[in-house]
Length: 440
Image 1 (cartoon, rainbow, N blue to C red):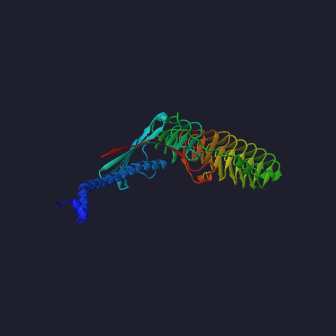
Image 2: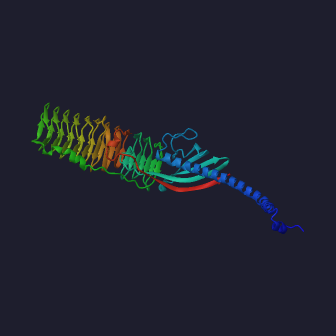
């Protein structure tokens, strides 16, 4: 009887038998393997699509983080509304394209949690090949106010109060206390206060976002360097008191060290060609003029009566008060520091073209009716007050800041990077939540 055993013993047809065996095994195994490979390819494609949509939905949240950092500048939603959502317009929807081939719809919702601070809810949905992935996130973006001149108004450790028709143009306001707007007061930008404080804006005069969150910290400005710069004439040529009578004119060469006072009577004019150091005080009578072509140090105070004018050619430090009478004018592009109060009275104009840094080290800065100021006002230990119809082109930073009837601040950052305390605002981003939801 013919058998495989005999066939093998004779070594005839052995290869055919073995081939038939493997062919039978292959016929049994290959179809399932092909099905498995096909299933794997489908699963791989599905995973790849899911990964792409996941990355795209995450990219939508990252896009929101970026526009929060830029304040929504240059961004419009699907209805053409510019900027970020805020307390008055709480929701915006943005349609993004070109993210891993996915279409991404981002819904951004502003939530005001009062004492707990405001935050943004993000719903970012990416769709690819009929499949969707949604990333839900909650973000809190907190500017720290790291620079004292990053905003039009900065209350370092107190309140901001804007009374009747007072206005802040082209800038934000920030306070380590409360912000209060009364009777038609307005702010072009955003408002931010630290946690446990409030923003009172009954008539919705704040156009931008209102934020309550965090502890604000600010850089300080070291004024000692200005004092040193102003004192360079201490070893100059000495002179006794300079006292000019009515209508007198005098010119002196510096560096000049005046052992007494400088007193200018009505309609007189004094010119110092160089630096000036004064042991006493400076008093300018009506319609008088003082020109100092260099740094100046005043050991007591500087008082300028009505209609007088001043021009300084270097850093000025006054170891007392600075007071300008009605209708005064000054043209100065250098830092002015007074140890105590700075008062600029009615209808005066002060540094409108050059906007220098103006500091009261320990006192207040009071800008009175109809005065027009160009500069960056800084009172780290006192208050700044802008009274009726005054205008400031620049910025203001103090413990507390009050603006009265029709006073305005027009935030102007020309030359800001050259000022101490200037620069970019640092900020903190908190990711309160970040989770996913898959939809077919």
